[in-house]
Image (cartoon, rainbow, N blue to C red; front, side, top):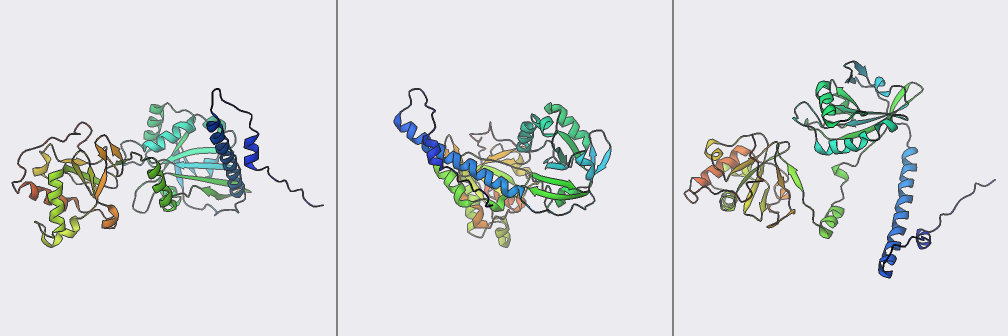
Length: 356
């Protein structure tokens, strides 16, 4: 007997049958809302199609690494121990390595929402949070946040984090979410979030900005620092770079990197992280190094004075960050030229935070 094939009712037709009417709405509003409802119905159907594909994935790779963890009770466990009595294990890799003073705020925001459902989720699967900080720090942070139902484990040797994309080859952390299954005694990887930066759609991002420009803050001190200076000083340094001259001689090219400009009259030279200001720059109120614990606005964010823009876009320097010592040498040389002996206080000093 042939299987019965059900035909879905067109979304537009279902939307037209919607009986909901809001008090005092206009005909224009109802027409637009009905069209939107049809798209929402199509989105619901697409989400289900994606879910069907996910459930139909073939068996993933067998888990065989030397993965060692420590739980909140202080007892070590292997990977199988994370399952408990469940057949499905979901692991979130939390960006809270031992080098961090505080964990990633975006990870924390996500886990705060999960905390409210963790007990219910735990009835069906094992949900754990793995980080590389010692378990004592994780427990203290969990207590500070008031979390009770999320289960935390320390990745003792870092092997799991490296193998399942919570730790990149250069040592930097990224959030990762992986799902594993245990069937007939064999543990296999089932699914992981793979929408990384490489899958970002440049056209979609550009469309978002065209429709509604967003304000974006970039945390400094991890992948880059920023040297914030007055516009006049920034112009002189950029001029020295472009003229291939200045005190660096043939080393000028190694000082070139991305430069952002704020409409308030401040320039941001992006450099490699970690190097403090030179003594001749440290005493100046109008030269600020943004390192760990600070941030800068990203172009084309909009400030009160106007949008942030790139004086030197990152792509022009092939996304390369310059040596901070070379950029500071150019800044010090420009200050010593006599053109700007007066110290000027930045207009946004209340929000500029000098890195330690």
